[in-house]
Length: 264
Image (cartoon, rainbow, N blue to C red; front, side):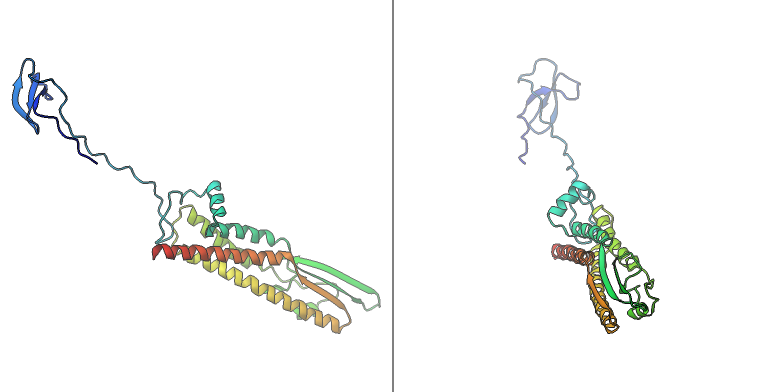
């Protein structure tokens, strides 16, 4: 910025007001005053403007250590969330995939049908399906074993519990920490927490599918030996939940790698 040059030496209105005019020597006011008409045209002398403080930058502290924060980091509203989602922001993907995972838990995860001859010689058949919240499934963590089903009274299914009491909290941790971070909450190792929870959920979901597929095959073999016809399937709800958990893991990994590149 170019400095403004002071006015040339001459008579100017006395800034102190003690005389009509005072002599300016080009650098400072002198003790010489004039009570009448100044010899030179009176003009305002140069008065340096005080320095203005720089305007503060809009800055929101980052909740991710080592990652530069953006001004909108603490204002993740619906509009900015949709904008992040269009850019495939990692944490936005985690939140959306967690919602999809929860919705998929109410869809059918397994279905089965069995037909055979009962003790009276009558033809009987039974079909049923289970979503993730029902306790009549051979779930990986809290389900019943095939031996429990075989020994159960005819027409009954052993009760166990829902794996969602374990799976859902894991998904909520990943999505909740990701959302809190975008809302300006300072959380230590946020990227690692989100990735860890998402990764555990994805591993459990893949293991769930493998376990259920094996249980269906085992049950089919047992019933076939007893002369019954059995068919079982993994349904769309389970596959959708697996995809959602994998998307959560991918989004968390994307955010973690971006943070490490920013620090490097």
